[in-house]
Length: 115
Image (cartoon, rainbow, N blue to C red):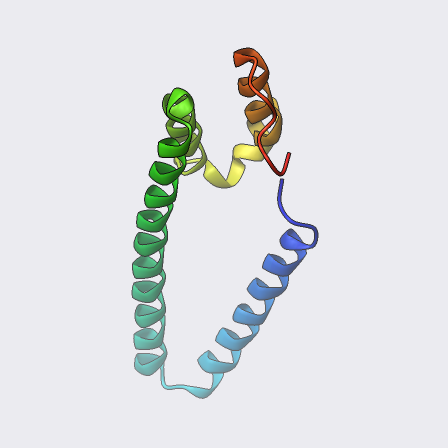
């Protein structure tokens, strides 16, 4: 489940970026604006690669703490970062919290902290 206010914050961030791009496009020469767009695209790509690498490290660290659940943890992580990661919540039958709780219940384990 996303923290309260998270979707609104992302929408606000997107609106701010869009507004800034409109201003830059109006104020910059077309070739300069194109270079700005290229720079932003490359930064986004680099940040995404870094984030995915960090995410993989976190997933592996979690699997070390819960070795019995390692395959399930990796499967959920793979699913969440897949091609439809943004739509995952829309097409999944249940939120991740329910899936994690179901895994613990099926094994007879105690509920993980924070749930």
